[in-house]
Amino acid sequence: MPAKTRPGWRTAGALVAIFLAQSTAPSWAAGKIVGFDAAIAPGTIVVRTQERKLYLVLGSGAALQYKVGVGRVGRQWTGASVINGKYIRPNWAPPDAVRRDKPGLPKLIASGAPGNPMGEAALTLAGGEYAIHGTNVPNSIGSFVSYGCIRMYNRDIVDLYSRVSVGSPVLVTR
Image 1 (tube, one colour):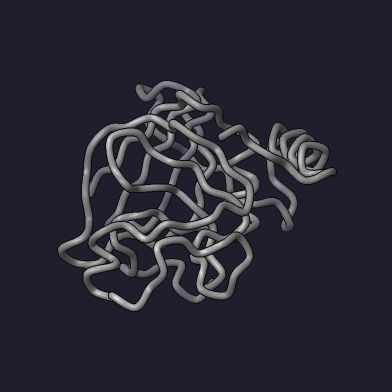
Image 2: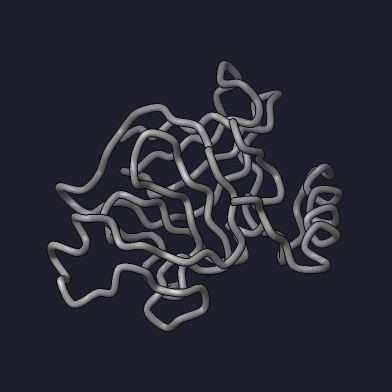
């Protein structure tokens, strides 16, 4: 499915990128610039589950850092993947593990529906049923809450969405 965007998102992303290129980001910008291992290629997304942080490596020893919600005990995973899809306000089909625990869920929850956990955007990961996505439950950010997906504030996933492409590498570590 091709990515769909709303008017103005690319413009907003460009403004954020301009400000982030400066030494300090404005207070309204998503993410914050932090020092990061220069050995990891720019454009790589690194999720550190124990920190509950996601980093987009910028290069030159810097990364954008975002606070995230991660898999709860028994649902966390580690490994390498790539982004294989980008979606704005996606529908959600609950994975089998979720449906086993919550058998009353429908097979598909439409975009914008109250029970849809995907938020404003999603980046799907190759090789599984996981995604990096927004959330309509912002108080879940910073916790061990999901079935393995990485949750972000909606403003943060919109920002990250504008900065990465299909094929961008993703590393998930403890």
